[in-house]
Structures are given as C-alpha cells and as structure tokens.
Length: 222
Length: 282
Image 1 (cartoon, rainbow over the protein chains, first blue to last red):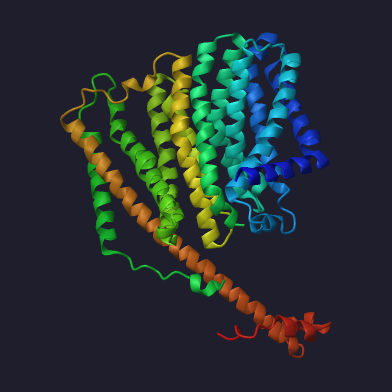
Image 2: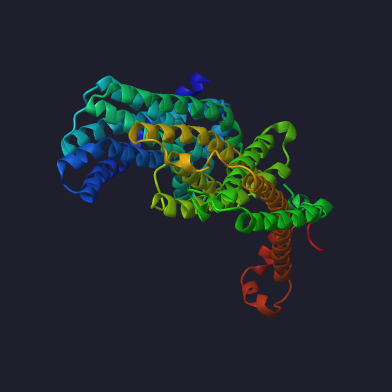
C-alpha cells in the first residue's frame, strides 16, 4: 500500500512539475485572494492583522478545492481512471498517493501565502512550532477530505459546481480550528492555540481512515 | 447491463401507512389544540413558550431520526451482505425529509430568537452547527440529482452521506469550543425551562409523538415516489431505445414521412449498423 502510494504521489507530482498548473494558476489565485480580502476589509493595518489567520486559511481552503479538482482532472483523460484501476494498485494506495500529492502542493502554497501574509498584512508568527504543527494537521485533513470528495465527483459533468458545495461544509471545522490555532501562534497565546489541535488531529485521522476504507468502492463507480 | 431488468416492481401500498397518516394528522391537530388553547402562557416567556411544543420535536426528527436513519441505511447499503437499492432509496427519502425538517428547525428557532434575544441569528454553537448540517445534506441531495445508473448513484451517495455524517460531531465540538473560547455563556440555556410540568410537559411529549408519526409517513411515501421515479426512468430509456431502433429500421425502407430527408445519403449502411439483432419489436 505504501509503495503504491509513493508511486501514485510521484506520478501526480511529476505531472504537476511538467504542467505547472498549480504553480501558475492555483498559487496566483490564492495570493490574489489575500489582496482581494484586503480590498473588502479596508486598508487599516489593525483590522487586517486581526483577520489575517482567518483570511490565510480561507485562501488555503479555496485552493484545496482547486487543487483537488486539478488532481482528478488529470485522471479524466481517455481511460486514465480505468488504467489506474486495472493496474493492480491497491485503492488505499491510490487514495494515499493522491492525497499526499495534494498535501505537498498545499504545503508549498502555504509557504508562499505565509510570506505574502507577512508582507501584505504586516503580521509575524511568534510561536513558529505551533503554526507548523497546526499547518501539518490541517493540511492532512484538507488533502484527505478533499481527495475523497474529488474522487466522488470525478467524471461528473457538473463537478466544477458540485465539488465546492460538497467539500466546503465538510472542511468548515478545519477552517475554524486552523484559524484559531494560527491566531494563537500570531499573538503568542500558546494554550488557546494548542487546544485547537484537538480538532485538527482527530479530523485528519478520521478522514485518513475513511479514505483508506471507502476509496475502493468509490473507484468502482467510474 | 440490461436496463430492462432494473425496473423495480411497485410495492403495494402498505395498510399501516394509512393508519400512520391518520394518526399523524390527529396527533398533530391535538398538539396544536393543546399548545395554543389548553396550556397556559409561561410566566417569563409568555405566549412565546408555545413554540417549545414544536421546535424541539422538529429538531428531534431532523437531527436524530432522519439523518440517523440516512447514515444507518447508507452504511447498510455499502456493506456487501445487506447491499440492496432498498437502503439507498430509504436513505434518499429520509435525507430529503430531514433537510425539510432541518430548515424548519432553523426557521422556528429564528422565530423564537427574534423576540427573545432581539436578533434573528446569533453565532451560537447549536445554531451554527445546525446550519452547517443543512448545507452538508443539501450537498447530498445535489449529488443525488446528478444522472447516473442506480447502482453507481447509490454507492456514490452512500459514501457522501457517511462522510457528511462523520463530520457532524467534529463540526459540533469545534463550534462549541469556538463559542466558549470566544464569547460568554451560551444563550440557549433559557430554551427549555426546567420547570416544565403538567399540561405543558404532556403537550411537548405529544408533539414528539406527532412529528415522529409525520416523519414515518413522509419517509414511506417519499420512498414509494423514489421507486416510481426509478421505474419511470427505466421505462423512458426502454421507450427511447426502441424509438431509435425503429428509426434505424425505417432508414432501410424507401423514404417515408419525416424520415425521408435523413435517409437520402448513405441511409442503407447506417440502417444495417443500427439495427440490433435481438431487441426489435415490442
């Protein structure tokens, strides 16, 4: 299963490295959204600084939708899904691989957004390890839940409009918990930030397990 | 896969359905009568307390009965030993009824909140998670409307229902923490005053029974509609397939009415290809 996951993740990331869709389309949209949020809230530094963690994670959330859509768009080609299905690769491995590739893209995206947030909103992360742990757990949760719903809506003609409706309410707890945790990391209040890891951790574990169990039946539906 | 075999037979209308329907109407009417005329107004809340006979039973139907039944039947569908379209249709029926009751829960809550708290909406933990739940299961209904073969749709929807259902406790706990870490005590404490007794308690109990009966009746009727819809879909497919094949047959024949124009260029070859060897005829 793990070897299969590595193979699938490697394949997805190699396609991404060659096509650079996430790099040249998803990433700029995420940075742009930070600028647009500033337009919506006004140029007052204090307002922006207090809203920064929420806006950061909102940008990551919407990018997750784009990244998972892209992740399954590359399987939409002639017979690609069937190829993956008959290749003898464990469905759980396919799930882990695709989720890992999405997670890797989201991690790169967060590094860039972190820089953009520091520059645009003038905020600094005081407790770096807390922000990193929260990011790590949130990224796993976003990538696994996103991949599950991506597979669910893959191959449907209405997937562009259906996927956000399905996935955004499910990801709402991640947005809530990750923004609160980052808020703690920005203001230096470790204890309030730490308590939110109790939401992020279980979320990541639950969707990791569900994905491993339910991905097999989902692949059959194509 | 032969589509014709999938047409489900129409289940006969069970006799208990009518009994449940009549009982639902009678008990709802009794709840309304008791709630509006017999029970006294509350000392603190006045006539507003009368919403208490309606709001908790509606929430009970939506959040526990409907979505619980939907999750259970989705699970039973995914489990190979109990896999049957019965569970899929039951899940669909109860989600649809659940969404309606979920919306009613929010509506009755807001009607009560406006005069009591002064606002239609507050970011209370229970309100927020109920609203998210509504959107979660609206997504399920949207997924259901995507055309697909019944088995494919059933598996897809069952997985979606389970993913959504697992999210419910996480959403609930996260918004509770969001509340307690940010604002003061929750405002819903005043909801069901602990001093409820006598006729008020009985009316509330009757409300629960009445709306549970309404739920059972609605889900059963909705299930039958689902069976009929699947049947109609299968029949339509049969009819249009037969029509296409009939067109293919006509192509071989010298021009005949509306088909004449199409058959002019290369019609003979196409007619031969289109004609299926076995499916022609009624």
